[in-house]
Length: 281
Image 1 (cartoon, rainbow, N blue to C red):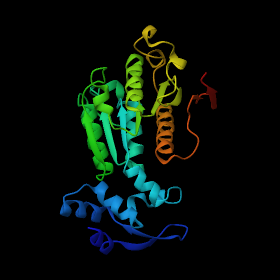
Image 2: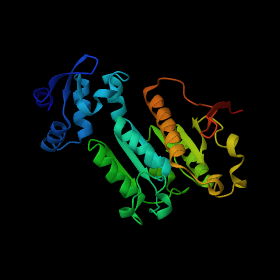
Image 3: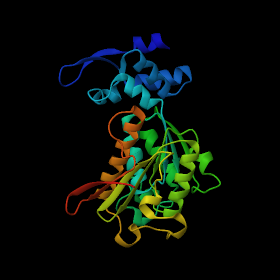
Image 4: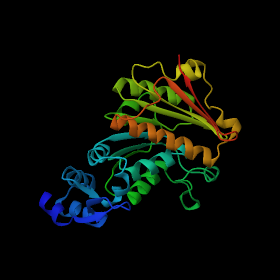
């Protein structure tokens, strides 16, 4: 296959004049089909030979080819595919996360239309997980997608998120959020957690050794089912900002770069344009 990848590559230049060798989406799809492998596999082979899949060309001034291959080799679980989850998978699919596990037992309803990027009038009552998978495949057919059209529970959590490099919490249910944290710690995976209410929200990253959610919400046994979103609603611009921050944490963890929000809580309020980082003690 490597020889075929090389034959189908060609020289190209970035807008600043930097030269690179690329391979097109069309050729990646063709090679994957001809050799009976995933597009993900073809893209990794190309990157390891210094050939950039053109879909990632604009990543290359920030990421190295090794970085991009690392993203393609990673597996991320996204739990909850509503407002946060829909925006998160849009970003992760475009940046080139290789395998996405999509977990949600819910279906779309009309009240989702204001903020959930995956929702539309023609998919009302459709499975969120299946709709999410179709969206990812439409954006980036090289990505491996695994769907779980069930709500996360103590019984299935470890099975669903197992072997994840990072788990992303996009839930709106506090009790389930604690279940997800417990399962993430058991499998040894970092958990990026966010919540949105109105035009404000927060993000944190919890590693297996951290206390985590108890420092934000108190003990799980005393929790109500829903958080502040139930009383304040949820607006699309706030959802999008928080989802982007979650994806930033995921990428930094995978690439072992930058400063992650370990034992810290980033709080934003878009109404008065404030951003604050608090230590979780």
